Amino acid sequence: MVANENKGKNMLKKSVAILFVSAVLTTTGLTTAAHALTVSNGAACAKVGASTIVKVKGVSKTYVCTTNPAAAGNPNIAKAGKTWTLKTCLTFYAQYKTYLKNLTDQKDLINLLSEPDKTNAMTGYKDALVSLDHTLASIENNHCKTGL
Image (cartoon, rainbow, N blue to C red; front, side, top):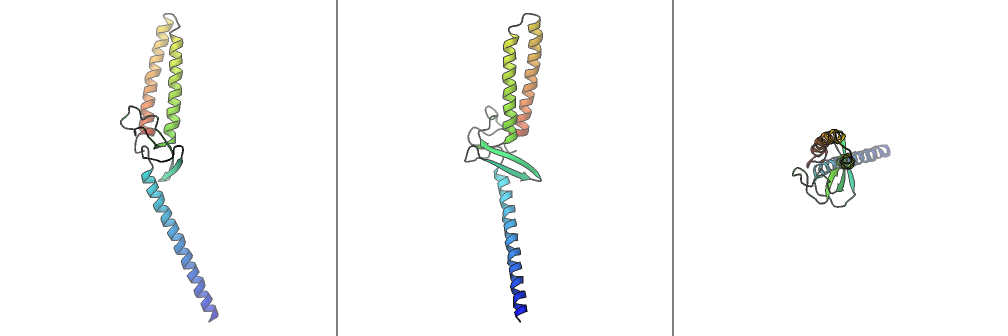
């Protein structure tokens, strides 16, 4: 009879443990799904500098709470304020700004050249600027746009 009581207690402990693990896994799954719905480019956030990783369909995306640098003048990107922003948006936008500054510096040097070198160099500058504009559009659409 003591053996049967111990068997019953062990079964009860196993059942409680299984229920507990199931509850934790279910709750975690719901929290992750809810978190994924609330964190996207342009969604409001509270603490500047906070970061979070959202995993959807096996793909992890890192978001940072900040002001999206690409927001100015672009209706597809969340306006100024504290919003979740993809880390790739921040990285690529910073690189874009660096390249733009370098081009501006080159233009200043081009203006010091004499003709015909100045005209040839200015043509290359304009081509590079057009290319950089296309790059910015790609960054905005693929990394900074609201909802990503």
